[in-house]
Length: 157
Ligand code: THU
Image 1 (cartoon, protein in one colour):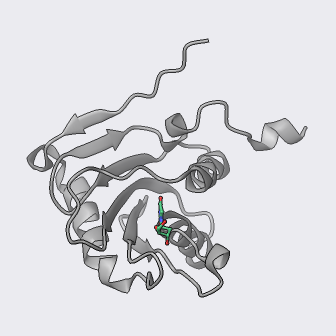
Image 2 (cartoon, rainbow, N blue to C red):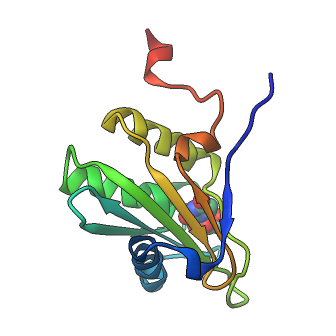
């Protein structure tokens, strides 16, 4: 078996207006992160099919394992305030404790699983726009591509 993960690397100037706005909204939300323990701020912004943008940030806790990643905060927010809404695209960015990052950040394994669940429940792929506050951008057409051989609801049948 040969597993291929398609990622397109672009410069920020090559983003569509919608992708650029989504990434800027994510960057703008970094200040909402609660990351006093890792000092690693992460923010996600999702574009819904109706054009609305919803953001989420990592929310840590003194009981470390309770902390939630930005991507899952954003998805939970969408599914709570706009149940049934379709997520078209998610931008993810971060700010490390030592300043501004340059390389894109890809969602952690748990968030990849949550993104697959979103794909399944909305029966449509969602794209990713991954970038630091400066530097290149990674575009992933379908977030599910980041989790080959994923465990999905059909495995429960
Ligand atoms: N984090 C995210 O919010 N998203 C990711 O995809 C990777 C990690 C958060 C979790 C924790 O609050 C901090 O970054 C350091 O791991």
